[in-house]
Image (cartoon, rainbow, N blue to C red; front, side, top):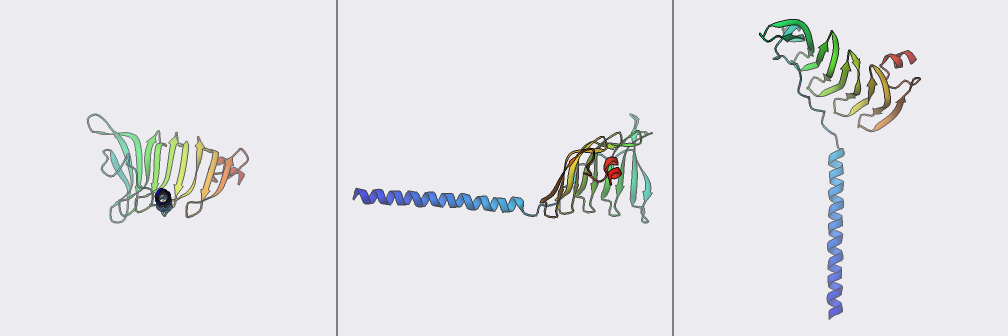
Length: 192
């Protein structure tokens, strides 16, 4: 009798343990499928300049007078617009920002973004004195990257990654003095 009880207890233990392991495995597979499925486009960041930002001056409009290009000027403590341009934004006809960021001495400065017409991010870049500096990422409309890499004052450096439409890495290039990596900087264009 004791042997039968021990046998039943062992069998119950192994069945329960097996069910727990299967549950964990199934949960892991479902999590992986959910996490790796088609991701949504990267949401738009909070913008430094928009149509409501003080100091904006429309310099180009669409035929229906919707702003197309807006320059932003510093506003002094009295609320008066100065002549110092501090930003720029370009828009689609639906008033969605197409591209924009800060300016300093007539050159791009700081974080800049380009957007798809739906408002999702198309390009993220950072500029110093008008030159790309740091990480640079270009996305597809589905949110997957096309390529990403790093710039050092306008010249690509480090490793650059290229992706297919599903987000799978298809190419990896180390940016050296004699290697076309980003395909856009002065160095790469001269090597092409």
